Length: 300
Image (cartoon, rainbow, N blue to C red; front, side):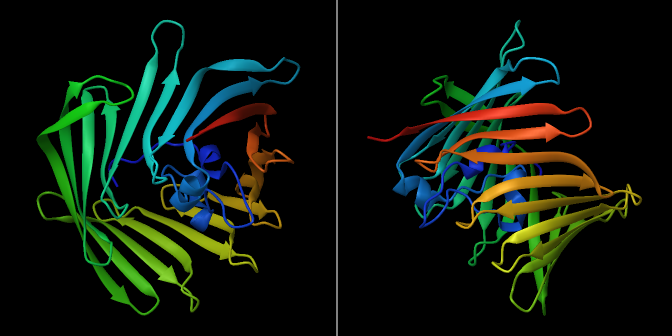
């Protein structure tokens, strides 16, 4: 809702095995802001850290390092624990920090991130079937500034939201209320007879803005394509198309606006180990290539 994790999708598809993947592409969300790590596979492979470096190449130029890097840390249960995204423009390093705190059952309880005014955390409350029913936003105090083991204390509450749900045949409505008890966003999810999500509509009550996302599936029940529509840009339709290999690993993503190809992304794997070695994203109009390379560190 209000605070979401800005994590790039390339980290979410790092390795594959015949048994499973570190990430699936359910609803195409491996390319959105939230991470969808398969904690069982992370734990099985004993992944401790994922380190990312970034490069860029323009037409007629050499490949150049970008002054940024990312490190993703996992606990021994396979859950994402902390994330650092560092960008150094030459005069002052800018670090984005995210911390995840879980219940003993692996349910996310708190997401903490830094901001210009300090650290802010979001606490999640769930109902008996695992649906979020409340989000509380706190300003935090830093008790120990240690990158590997920081310590925080939630200080003052900033705001909160509550959520209610209504279910209908092949449809569920999620209503978000602000701290004054007023509903301001509706999310309506539609499913087909198989139980697959085929559409999610977001409606802002104050402005009547509507955003719709439709999902299409291949014969293996994987998301084959997504079509996005916004009432703010009614003449513009965005679509995303995915391709997978025979082991159901994501191999490519193509993004279109009004059927014109804007970006295309390829995933390159190590032939021997199956580990994803790099991702190449091309901006079609300029032929600008953005390259990400990976290094995976394991628990002993």
